[in-house]
Length: 116
Ligand SMILES: [Zn+2]
Ligand SMILES: [Zn+2]
Image 1 (cartoon, helix red, strand yellow):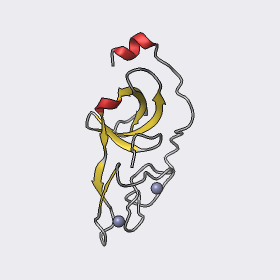
Image 2 (image 1 turned 90 degrees about the horizontal axis):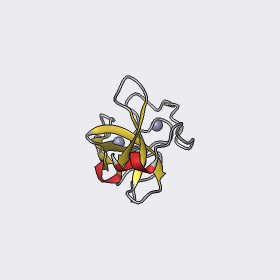
Image 3 (image 1 turned 90 degrees about the vertical axis):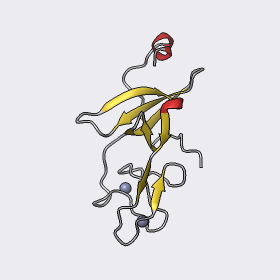
């Protein structure tokens, strides 16, 4: 499964992130949203830095492994969906209000992108 798609849960530089937008340029960048900080943080990352998110299902009766390549990301809570039991977020699915389809407020020009 192609996991570099908008809305998918991934890791960028070891941090948990959601892919927001593919930036069409010569060096393959994505707009990503980091989920591990106190504040919403949108940045641009080279596709080379993006890795699958790998975790395990939260179900005590399940424990199957989940990852960005083999599992879908829930469009509401943006956790990986278990292929065995269908669970996503640990304490039940909650809408995280992340809008994957809307464009970012700021766009970097090409010179700035080359620095990333
Ligand atoms: Zn499961
Ligand atoms: Zn969910």
